[in-house]
Image 1 (cartoon, rainbow, N blue to C red):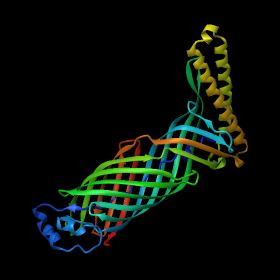
Image 2 (cartoon, rainbow, N blue to C red):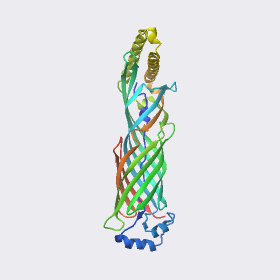
Image 3 (cartoon, one colour):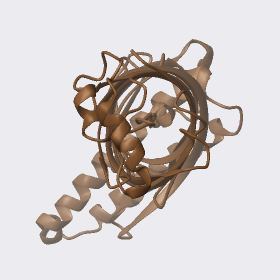
Image 4 (cartoon, rainbow, N blue to C red):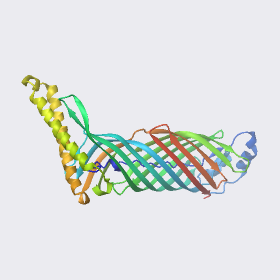
Length: 373
């Protein structure tokens, strides 16, 4: 069989798209002329609400509306639990204690468009529309318990890489505050990612606190900002879907691996039965030995049924489907981020950000245009 587990659709697609501008509190003698100008100038736009009061308090506000194009590359390890798999809408086989994953990694390239407005001087709200190209690489093994030897053995292993496309939409907000020329931004957004192979869109929540400072350059309205912070991802853990077997199974020696697995199950069953039959009646009445024997039989029965069903499906692969359900979670909820934004003028900004120091790495680049409303 060719990578029948379909863990490949255990995707992790999160969108890091936070506010790229902020309300800056002007302070210091060098900025006294600008501070005085802000206090006496009427604010010309309807948004943000209380924009006039904020400027008179010495805050230098960005234009109230904007649109940005963002590119995000991300690679992340995920954890898979409660895996069940079935074929051709037949029985679902729970593979806990049978399948172990030694690798489950998602890579994605996402392009998003993000319109936003400053609703208040301290609150930016935005929408997300995105298109993702992604791939999932998974390695796993089939493990059997043998109370006769007191060991667990990997009897066969599989690897898979599946490429897929997805679309995303979401909403977000970024509360910010400017303090002494610096800023604190608490970005958060919710996104729904629609993958054709899944029964329903995957829900993702992202939280990204950032603390930074803005530096003025030698031309009016030209600045550069730097920041550091964190990036936390949570997504709905349960995943259910169905897909044609031929869409995700690579060519190779999978048939041989399945047959090796079936042979190993039969050999292990013989060893377990021989061990049990070799016990004395007193030893067979031991709760410990009974638990070992029953557990081994349950695992061997499920493994044998699953491998037999997989073998049948692979023999008619062009007409077979596979159904799956699982729980998935990021291996690490948090990673560290650093970033910078270059503001050419109050209309145009470019931003770059990198995330690292965990099992997730990412890079984001963004171009933004702003205007007044």
